[in-house]
Length: 125
Image (cartoon, rainbow, N blue to C red):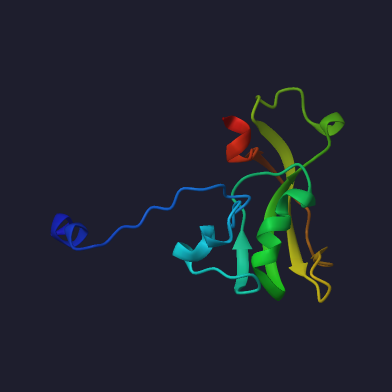
């Protein structure tokens, strides 16, 4: 029965840079139906080195929208046993302010995590 159900399901695959969903052309997001200011919440599943890496995603958020992302701790605070490509991070919650900037939530609990570090797709080419 499961095989029959899966055969009847349509699948779409979108390839792109998770940290730059709009890409270099304005039409890059058309297949996803995403416009700036149209998204309520974003959960980033890869660690980033700083909030500047979240700017393209923040553009998709509506004012008051939320973004959750692991932010790597500074290099001096990384444990010696962290493997290459991973980091010790804080899972942080942000809200998009009226001015369009990401503001850290005041009640954010500073959850310590370890994550794979994101790199832009173009950097790996």
